[in-house]
Length: 149
Ligand code: HEM
Image (tube, rainbow, N blue to C red):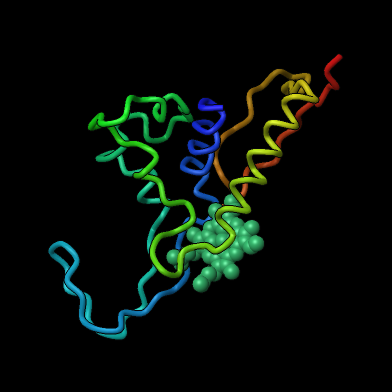
């Protein structure tokens, strides 16, 4: 259960399915770190950038490594709280709970019922994305799904 959660968190971080938040507008002038953002500016959070920042995730930022989320609590290393695949604040994704539950059930039921193999060539899937529109999608892969006995 803990490892499954870590796999899903890492999939949401690495894929950053929604690479950007929706457009927001500053209602007043805002100071953010060393930046001053004037009133009425359109702002979009760069979720992909947050999830791939080597200053946070280190040299393994581009790797798919669920074990990064299995660290003991209180560790200074980045953790689940550093991932915001559904955005943050009052206008964060209202579908988050539904999406997380669906992803969990889909993954667990698929792996319980099926063995997944790479295509006959044996090449491992390329983990890069296709980015088209506002959603990042995986590249096309040929996989073989075999029912478990
Ligand atoms: C893996 C699945 C999903 C991801 C990664 C995702 C991510 C996001 C993100 C990043 C935003 C923008 C938040 C912001 O601008 O601060 C958003 C907004 C939104 N999402 Fe999702 N979402 C997912 C699934 C869903 C589902 C299943 C639903 C509905 C059943 C949904 C409905 C919405 C709506 C209505 C908004 C606009 C909220 C607003 O502007 O107040 N999303 N989502």
